[in-house]
Image 1 (cartoon, rainbow, N blue to C red):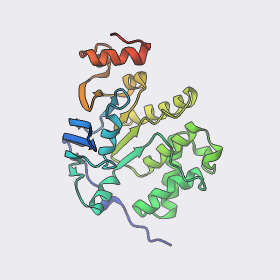
Image 2: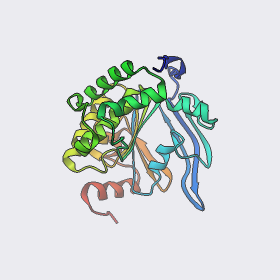
Image 3: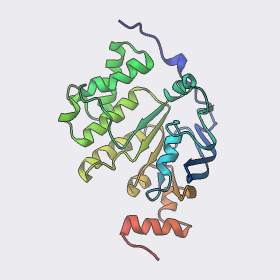
Image 4: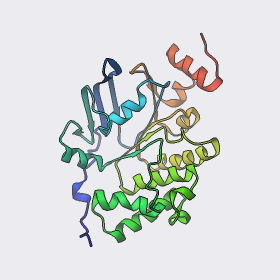
Length: 265
């Protein structure tokens, strides 16, 4: 049986008053195509930031750079005061404090919901089976799925599978949570399940960066909305102001298309 070791000493402390995320002059290119063109962004502790923008604007690429799933062409990304431009061992240590929820659920089909939520704790944090099970059950309860702990993914709806994925991330006790359009693969009813879960997380003073196309959700939960287009941040600020009274013509046109299905041109 694997020896239980505490993961506390392997975690990074949040420095009071310092940004949890700092992005400086971020560029990302794929061949000759430049997707991000000098992005600067800071996210404070406990802040919920929603990134919005049209397809191909660079918003998902930006999010993936925040845990080095995409390696920047130039510029700098720091999380919890740590540069991500480090070796594999140090990067793994930093990633323990960064939770990521994708569009696809990426659950192990042969494992139950409980086992899926336990797996990362066992392999990534070295928690004992009993400790991982206790924390996994708490995480499933937090997303309203304690009664489905023994169910395998194939027997769960898409919304339930995504909530298991969220529970899996929560169980790692990350200091930052990243969401890449977590409801885009779901129908409206199942989308509401996941959005309700995320709304609850946002109320818990968690640091969250969410790429979303759900404008009403962004307005409800975000402390700040960031509109990105063409690889640059065009506008950002309080969602109630930015989404109601955009100062840029480009954001106005985007909102017309998203909210009303019409183009202002």
